Length: 176
Picture (cartoon, rainbow, N blue to C red):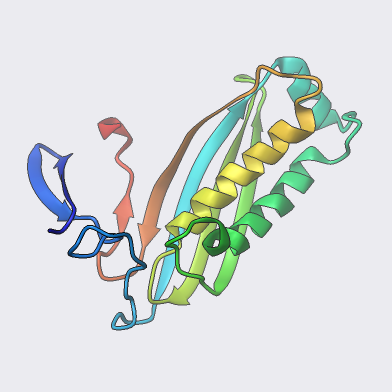
């Protein structure tokens, strides 16, 4: 029996097969050998909220651990490259681009992380983008936890994906 679930989308119920399970319901790595190589892009984002003085220390460069945002950017790039080693059923991909944008927001005392990943391959780069966001934000947390234990990471999500058989998709934030 194949694993299935009911998904609600735009007022329509439909059944979808969970592709990481075989007909017997056992976990397996999806066979993508028959798929065409296409240009694939994924954009994910998330944020970390902190006390105002923590963000000031990051922005002024007075944090004793150094360039927090620079180190977080490198950590995110490294994470994108290691995704298949950390998520058991994820395919290893040759990434052609990992762009990490860290935007401080003084009004909300937070940092917004947006990651764009790209490849020319048979499967998408959504997991790599999501992994990079999580690790970049966790790196900020790690570097600042000594001065701010109240930081919160939230809103980590896929914003858009392009390419592949299923085509393009953009998050409808009004549906969230």
